[in-house]
Length: 184
Image: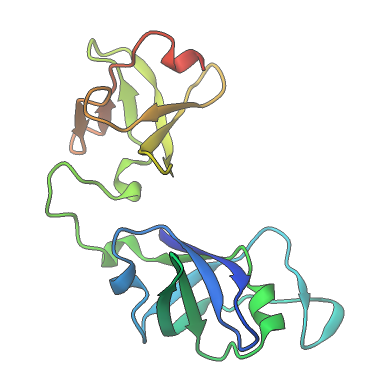
């Protein structure tokens, strides 16, 4: 599954929500009629329709009714979500699509997150550093999250100067980190 967004707080009283966009193609992913799969947050909130103490079940799929940009944020309305309380109960839910349904990027220097996660991370000399555990989409640049066998994770800027090669067929990412980067 490929995460394309995360539901944030409600906007207004009619069920519209903010969405933290995690895709380069928001207009395509959040087009009206699009069906998105869901991954609920860890703790289900109370069901606003059934009363306190009854957990809310996030639907397995949500259908986009409308989407628009407002002050730099994506606002989305889902079919059947008509009240603010129900929209609030969706907060934190991840929105996903099947990675098999996503065409590979046309640019050979561009990659989807799911293509990188799990790849071995090696130095130019072939020393294994660990594996890509995820991608952190920071404001200034994307960061590879390196899971190291001997310790905590490390963040590696996903820029050509530090990551000179991505070999999908070979299952590896070559990283040439400057001194001290992996010690942060």
